[in-house]
Image 1 (tube, rainbow, N blue to C red):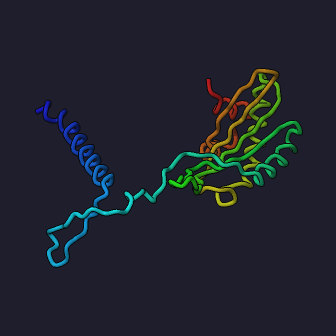
Image 2 (image 1 turned 120 degrees about the vertical axis):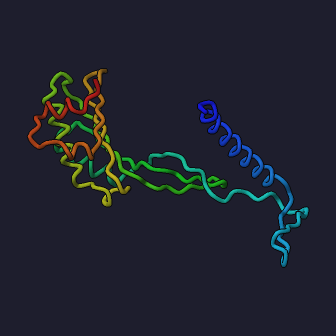
Image 3 (image 1 turned 90 degrees about the horizontal axis):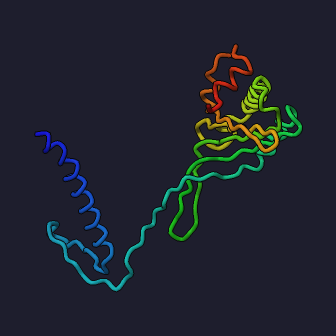
Length: 192
């Protein structure tokens, strides 16, 4: 009984693959299936001089698209916190790439990126920069920026050639208790 349970997935996989291969072979031929009227159970296969039909759909690929207008606004706001800081935004979603090379983009969320030159040993300051930056993001919710869901914020703190990267899920950040200290916010999201 146990052996049968183990072989069932392989049997199903073989059947699915076989059906897919059969369908591919049918599409590769120059034959056209024409139903015969009056007798729906019969079909006639006729050679067709036309080309093999091509797939008119698209292939989906994960993609990022720059958001220059939003990036400019975010960077202006961040420079009020730290004049040497930089910031930008990108929409994250899927490119639908068609056979002719054209594509269309569907945004799922907007992700934000902040870069600060600062003392990497001062976790209180790193947390303060994160909290101030997250306050800026309240002006850029889904609907104002592309995508229907909230994205993430990536903080890059640099000191010379050293850097610390912190990834913040915006939804998770918004659920934090308000009484957390700057240092506690930084420690919550830093990667060990």
